[in-house]
Amino acid sequence: MRLYALALALLMAVSRPSVAGQQRSAAEIMDLLMWGREPVGGPFSLIDHTGRPRNNGDFRGKLMLIYFGFTYCPDICPTDLQNIGLALDELGLAADEVQPLFITVDPERDTAEHLKEYLSLFHPQFIGLTGDASAIRAAADDYKVYYAKVPSKQQGGTYTVDHTAFIYLMGADGSYVGFFPPGTPPGRIAETLRKQLAEHP
Ligand code: NI
Image (cartoon, protein in one colour):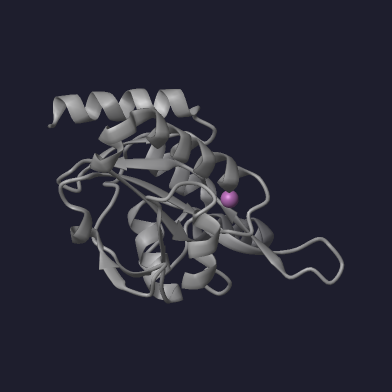
């Protein structure tokens, strides 16, 4: 009986709604995002890949494509960043109306210089953003992004970062439009962007 009570208490502790400062699980966060249970987006104050302070207001008037990831990511991040770059290429001149942003979830290793070098591989318009751990965590929480450091399995390896990988589309007024799932092909991203630009010139 005591054991049952203990199990129940533990269960309640786990399923209790999370309070500020407590990290939510990947499943909880994905659930919030996918079913629109909480607002997505919000103000951020970060440092760009040239070392300049940037906040969300700097990008008003343009659509924003926001991606949270890290430069050491072996596969998902590079694929999605490449897709964003190709979508912008497809847009031609209209790409000027779109600002792609890459926010690192690994600020420890992703310095401004490192972001600059990495993002130049994908598209010249990319702006990389980093900041201190608490600023990154706050931005990720606002966008319903899950990330957590995971020790590397390789011997002598450091760590990797487990993270959700959605591409967020924000309107020219900074409000949330929706997300593209990981692996969305460039043509589909371009089509949605074109539609957004036509509807909200
Ligand atoms: Ni990644």
